[in-house]
Image 1: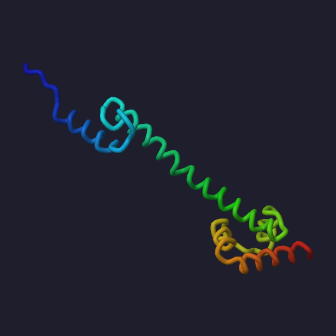
Image 2: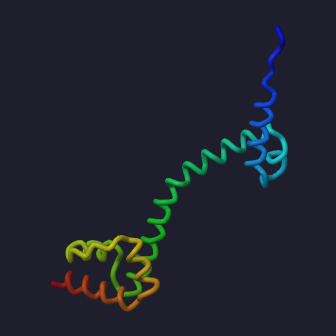
Length: 119
């Protein structure tokens, strides 16, 4: 019986990994042994961070809204609570964009909330 090594498939697999790790630093882009580890690690981080990205953006929007609210004399928590009482259903992304690009519109929302709280 002849010895079967399946060298063609091995070479293809190694070429595919090295092609995907092109641009990595040092041996991680040149040697299969290190490139393979780097390739799998990068995939794991990418998978994790695609999910983490959502919470990081939400945190960013909350920080922006809080900063805009504080300049107008109300805390973030009171602002969000007041919006819920007024049945204004804007998500944090929309509120953040409003605070950045349309300051008068955001100021009107804050005034509505402040008037609601006083009553």
